[in-house]
Length: 263
Image 1: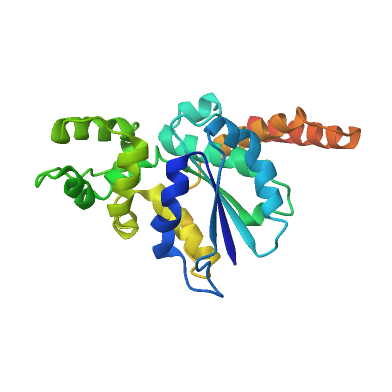
Image 2: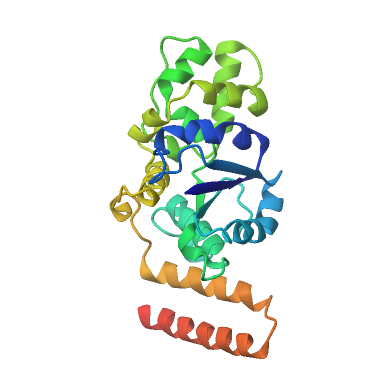
């Protein structure tokens, strides 16, 4: 088996393979060392290129594709139901994930997975407080009880570095150095449910099944339908045949009826 990770930046390209190694099981059941990174050099390019890149890789039937991007600054718009939900962060995560996965061709969608990082890659750094204290050379630093609740973790690291090391945080330098220190198992054991879902999905692909809904509960039905409707409308802009147009219009009408019936 082979895993291809599509990411948005240089730091991700440099650190993700090593960071995720503890959850890559030996071949032939697992990915082993068969993990490759594709760096799109920016989130805008990722949005425009991930479908083509993923479907090209998925031509190989032993390949799985994982697309990672920061939820903070993700290039998608969300419905009012998402913004007004009881847990807007989780709703945005699910909406972003749904939008990205819906555009992949049906023959590949069981081997493609989008995982928005809540909220940024630096969230995982903050979840390993042991390594953060070591890097900042401080003995006392309060553990973050819910790292994924920090909306701008990179800014939090900037504040910590300025306070304790009297210099500015640079992702290309400090982010990479911190990822050399942090332990993915400690992040997994912390209160980062979306990271846990990512890892459990990777393990499930390698034969270790998990009940992901116990960790990441599904969104309310109406929100799911709103997301599905948005995905259909996005597809309407790229229709190439009358048959496809009529099919999407029928699907749109059916979803609207379902939304009205759910009120």
